[in-house]
Length: 136
Image 1 (cartoon, one colour):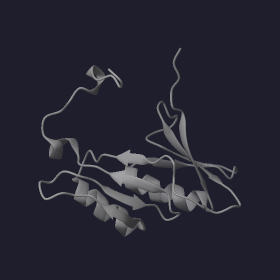
Image 2 (tube, rainbow, N blue to C red):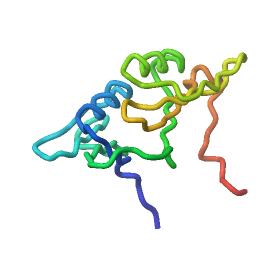
Image 3 (tube, one colour):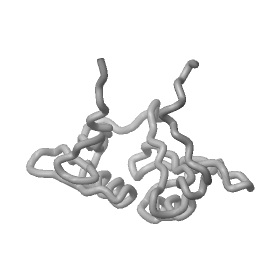
Image 4 (cartoon, rainbow, N blue to C red):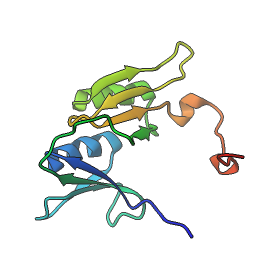
């Protein structure tokens, strides 16, 4: 048996504002109607994972137990980090190394952590992850 990831759901204070941040960062599109929930997806109808933003009353109280690792496809890691910061993200940790490897941990405007990794072109030779198995 198998399952697909349908949505990555974010509890938040302002669903439309946070959805606009993530849409600008990912290049995806914001979809909403009269519902308080807001969807961000590469296209509509979504055929793969999308991001769902749901307004809640309570604020964020602890570090995320799950976060997204983003890999730019049309720019460098550093350009993506600069873009995220200009959109309102804050720097949590800078783990870039002198050899160009590493990542940057940021938080979106509501404090949800995410990482920006190097792009495929910055990494060099591509690796087929389908040939790897965890635990083998």
